[in-house]
Image 1 (tube, rainbow, N blue to C red):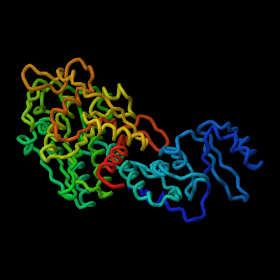
Image 2 (cartoon, rainbow, N blue to C red):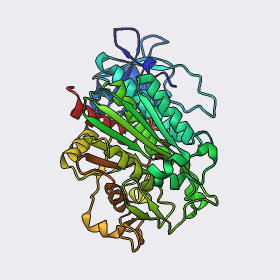
Image 3 (cartoon, helix red, strand yellow):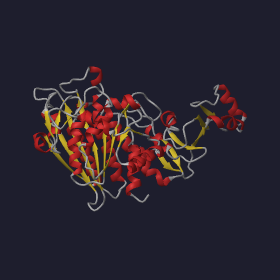
Image 4 (cartoon, rainbow, N blue to C red):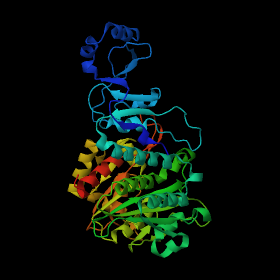
Length: 462
């Protein structure tokens, strides 16, 4: 695990190199105040003050230097100086002006490496000093939670099956004094028939399971976090093409988000009774795989005509959401890499959020803006409910035609959520297709910081 705590330290006046972060509009006035030596250096670099311009600036002695970065990222952005966190030599740094703020998170995440299959970069840590020591611990926890999502999603499916998700939950439970209960294999057939149906074709060592973690004082408000844990998705008998299967190790990204959010809740000791549920399956192909046209029983008692074995995530979530609702939670959040339609609508960086609860929607959207971790609300449009009609069962899992795919998937999930609980569904991609400063290509957390900020607002005094 990356040692993030070593990368963000209280500023007690210790020696450090200076980082000048200058906005493009302020570049000329900043330059005019610099020494002739610095202006000559900048001219030699042919900098014009456009975003991304950077230079090493000479100091008064041979080994003295500072860093210039021209940046148009907002002061509230975690990614403001992330490019430097990844590129500067090992050492200690401080900003010339202004607070570190959210930029400390990007500074740390820029140094995170996924090293399960390659040797790590051996360069030492780049330490950033901050005058806001009170927020260091939480910033470190946010970095650790983000790294947890990245590490879990980046891990190949050969090393990240249902049992490995269970082990990740056990690790969190041991760290925070929580308890884990797991229902596995054929024991799911009666209580969680959709989870069982989706995972039954997997090999014995990859048997399906429902993983449940509980933590906190039972007298506190109860919340449930549910994460889709499809550790690999072939598409089932409606098999995906090879291009569509290439990244399906990331189909457990919802579970990774739920685990990471649970870790933040427990580490912050929020006054809640936490219930984490992960339906963990591998959607495999074998003689006993569930079939198109099968009618599936559900924990809720509804029947579902399976029209597409590649729409399996909503099936396993349906049973898990039903179980979550049986404990009368005040709030249910689910995370899932659920639909390609969400990516077509909003791209990889902006997850759609669905909820019927106006207060919850407002809180999530506001926290997304505040945390620079935005999402976009899409409608649970009641007019599309009729698309879920079946001729032979209570509903289908995937309507024909492909219209409004993200919405109809959310409407399917809503059938399994109790009306007494506030509920939001986040259709996350869990993957970054191209690198940005502090955000390498690969597994990524979306709406995680926003969701945690919302929970802090609702369930704590701070």
